[in-house]
Every structure is written in structure tokens, then in C-alpha cells.
Length: 157
Image (cartoon, rainbow, N blue to C red):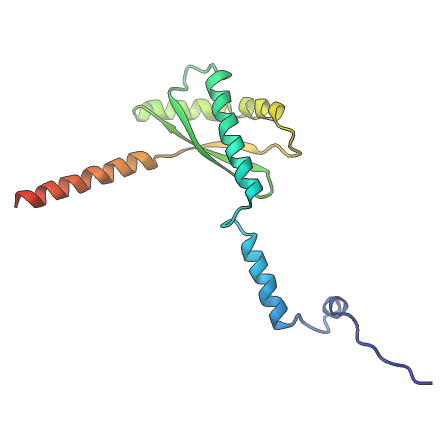
């Protein structure tokens, strides 16, 4: 009677350290990890980001009665893939003093906003909301002004 020695399945060999994944499997696995990374969020995360942005804007507009908060526009939100944290990007109209006051008021009201958001949604995890000032539009207008100024000085020479 001969005993046939069948090779162990690949997953058992790798677990024992006897064998490594074949090169083609390693490449495909790394490729799949790259697709699931932060650079390429899924459609679900995009929908959650948009929903969070809309709801936070509504809560700030209708529920928040803090006199420190001036004219605030919620531009976008970014929820992490583990749904634990959310960055909400806002734009504030006014001078630097008004922007600082509004941001301080928003940071103080983050728990209130998070609580009202939790009442609206039926998510398992409610992300911790933090507010960030987005000055992209102001920087873009400054660059546009400088480019016009350079163009005007080039035409005069």
C-alpha cells in the first residue's frame, strides 16, 4: 500500500511559512488594495459625504442660534472609510476676526450638530465632526487679481 502525498492547499502553505504567494497573485492583491485606498472612495462614501454636507448645512441654518456664527457656507465633507471621523469644510464671509469667531462657534457647536445629525440618520456609527476653514475661493481670487495686474503691467510697457 502506497501513501500518496498530496500538496497542501495554498492558504495552508502560506500560513505555515512553507510557501509564499505566487507573483501573479501578489500583484493582483496589491492592485485591489490600491483600488480600495483613500484616493478612490466608493459610491457609498460619496453619497454619505453629500448627505452629511446637506444635513450639517441645514442644522447650521435652522437649529443653531449662536450669535458668533456669521454667514457660513458648507462647501464639502470628507468622511473617513471607517466612518469614525468627518471633516466638514466651510467658507465664512467676513474679515479675519469674523472668521475666527465663526470657526470657534462651529467647533463649540460640533457636539450639538453631531447629536442632531444622529437623530436624522440611521447609521451604525455617527462620525465625529470637525470643522475646517476652506479659503480656496479667496486664494483663487487673489491669484486672479495678481494675474490681471501682471497682464495690465505687461500691456503698459
